[in-house]
Amino acid sequence: MAQYGSVFQAGLFAGQVVVVTGGGSGIGRCTAHELASLGAAVAIVGRKLEKLDAVRVEIESTGAVCSTHVCDIREEAAVRATVEAVLQRHGRIDALVNNAGGQFPSPLSMISAKGWDAVVRNNLTGGFLMARECVTQWMAARGGAVVNIIADIWGGMPGMAHSGAARAGMLNFTETAALEWAPVRVNAVAPGWIASSGMDQYPPQMTETIQNMHTLVPLQRLGTESEVSAAITFLLSPAAAFISGACLRVDGAAPNAKRIWPQVGTGGSTAAFDGFHLATTPKVLQGKAARSGPATG
Image (cartoon, rainbow, N blue to C red; front, side):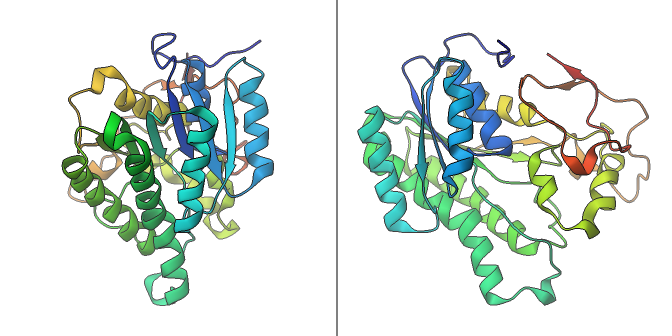
């Protein structure tokens, strides 16, 4: 049976319990698989039971432990009850991967107050609520680690300003929480353009943009879900025991591309790492020139 090809030591998280929000697809699904392959019991959280159950079956088929928890992370009472349910099921929470989120493309002038609020609650308020409950209900007295997934927010996020503002807020929250909640470690991971199933959720008018994103990345390719998961796993690991309040970019240096230096990359590409045995290419990229790089691992 195929197994996750993690670069980390087998059994690294044995005996630990990790909560992964947005665990039913994309980066969250990949991260849950990697952590489970390293011995963690994972509790995956999301809004759709069908998607969560599908991932649970995948993980349990490898002999690992996985529980599912339906929750709208924007709702305070639901978040509190979900964390209580995880503790009742597993008896502890050693780490939280705050991955759930979502947005829609729109110019600023077309974003309604309702749309703005929905995206901010998805990408900022929900992450705060999940982290606060995991810390207050368990980690404050025993320690732990939180990794908040944000985005490439440097230089603004034209076309998705609501998401950019929320995720910038999440970075500032990360820095504050690292101080107020110490010795709980709180860090962030900022994925750039990642070849993930989330790309298929955007409207058809964005297809050409998505397919050409790799040309704007100095490494001349898109990232893989496994490359983001590896960054998350590192920040949860003992090797990151003195890292808190930090943000690890996983973006191929895309924010470093400059108008005064028009050359982006020199051709060719670094080899991509893809240890996820169940990874698939997003439909929007299939059969097109958009590059995710040759896989390794």
